[in-house]
Amino acid sequence: MLLAIDAGNTNTTFAVHDGTRWRAQWRASTSAERTADEYVTWLSQLMAMQDFSLDQIEDCIISTVVPQSLFNLRTLCKRYFHIDPLVIGEGVDLGIRIAMDRPGEVGADRLVNAVGAHVRYEGPLLVIDSGTATTFDVVDADGTYQGGIISPGVHLSLEALHRAAAKLPRVAIARPDRVVGKNTVTAMQAGVFWGYIGLIEGVVARVKAEYRAPMTVVATGGVMTLFQGATEVIEHFDSEVTIRGLYEIYLRNARTFSTRRIAAAQGA
Image (cartoon, rainbow, N blue to C red; front, top):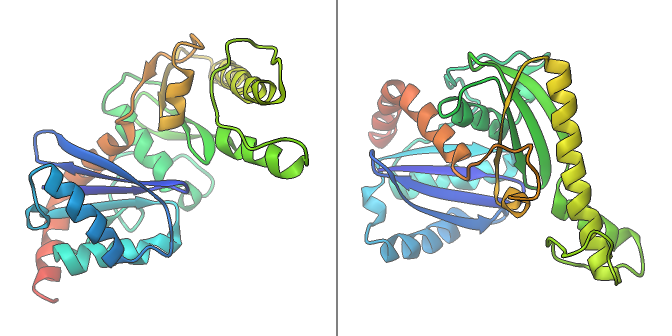
């Protein structure tokens, strides 16, 4: 089985693939201080609930935008799975070209999303992901990553309102019944929710106008499900874009990675 780990700024996703399908997915809050021992204690219990164990994990792949967390995730894979994990960005063949001024600056999550969307949908594509940041990424029909847009995420915007304005409370993101709020909480929720709908619709329109070609718009990430049904510009809501991209990249590197894994297990 393959353990795929996607460490974002807010949450870290662990997913297990048995070679045919995804067997399970779990999320934990991202913390650079969380040790390999803490990860494995939590993970082993969740695996047991799905009727499989640590020793069934044969390969690992990691994507992270939090460099401080990589050491402990590597240690998890080496100490408990006896695997030197495949880490996105370290000479890994993504199978796509990156048409950027500085390709090394592009976040691993955005590249993995580009791969995951490209293998499922016909391009050109505009992939929207919302977590700590809301990102818009353009992928050509041939899979070339062309660039994108980065804006603050929904929760970050709400937290900024609370911290910067003395009388504004901390509120949860929600879709209000009305656009015009009747109290402070619903006014904040309306501003963020409908403000982000406006952001999404405006950016999509401008990207399409600049690109001058039809584009398929795909949204992923837990936050994006909140906007499902609120705008017609998003054609597909797909929660598996990232883990699909990780699995595709793993398959493309499987032969080389297998050699590294065996060498690591032998103590090379």
